[in-house]
Length: 243
Image 1 (cartoon, one colour):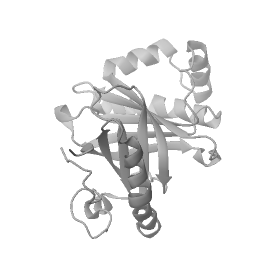
Image 2: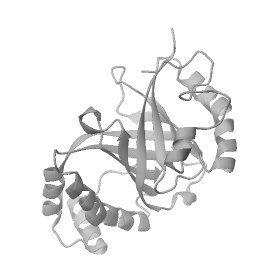
Image 3: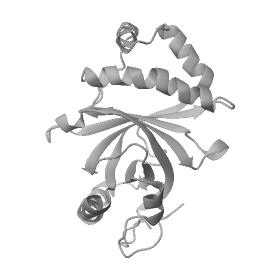
Image 4: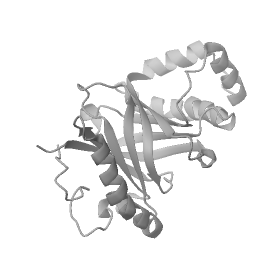
């Protein structure tokens, strides 16, 4: 039996609004809170404007305050439309386990600093008018190689690791693919991430781990990372089953 099942998606990194991730220490694991958003029918343009006019401004205030370490808004490229579970992934990065969500009072104060003139209630009502929350995944990053660039593309490879195989999976990725990712990052400007799902949990989940291959351009995504292998990344070690 293969210890892994895998399916992939491609995102464009449309907004990398801000980052202070360089302050991370080795003693603090890096976490990402990934919010999956589905835009309502016919609201794509309005929602994109909302992200620019509200979400990014609010995120910048929180990065400047040290509440979050980085903030990325990525739009789905494949799959898209009704086939896509998420139209956007909105990912807040944290040095250490994420704090509780800001209170209503703190959000109102942050909005004022950001120059957002509408009320918190109006902001939330507008968000809900334009989009639906699909879910939130909290990831702990085991490895991070390279720096993503705005306008680049990310291929997310979701893995379903069977019970008892997590250690083997992490070791093989860290001692196998990581070295290729480091070399590619230096030569081609790519980046790579290895993460385990911290929350939610349970055997019924469709995935519990992921790797992310990040490319500086669409052309680079098409070429992939030169490794002498063809097709979707899979170190030939009897571990990958592609959906």
